[in-house]
Length: 158
Image (cartoon, rainbow, N blue to C red):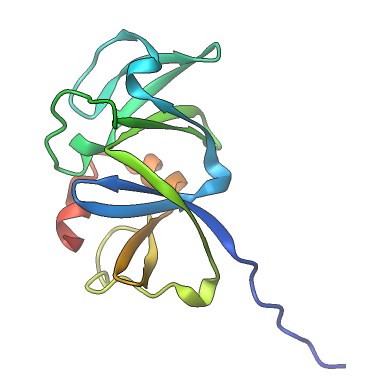
């Protein structure tokens, strides 16, 4: 009997813009999409943890990825989106410049990130490029479990 290797199934990624770059996270981790101004926010915090909000009765922290990745967030505008994530440890909101769509990718469509060898960033899954579009794929569970700011990630691949 011969073992056959079954190719991994394609995965859907939610793509979003952040500081002029485009990122993707596993769509299975996305609970819902909201506009920042539509969330009931009742506490403010520091630069990266942008406060606490309520969505559908769930109290959650808001992480401003614009500040975490070294871009200047400024005041939210109508295009400022919040991706509400259902992670293994919690539900949280991730503030981004804007959601750009959903992309279905097969594992063979991903490439290693150039210059990522030796970088302490196990949350970087890979890179997808097609038709002039470049998507940096992130493992959102690992990224949100990193201790300390993740500001170096954007500068490495800009």
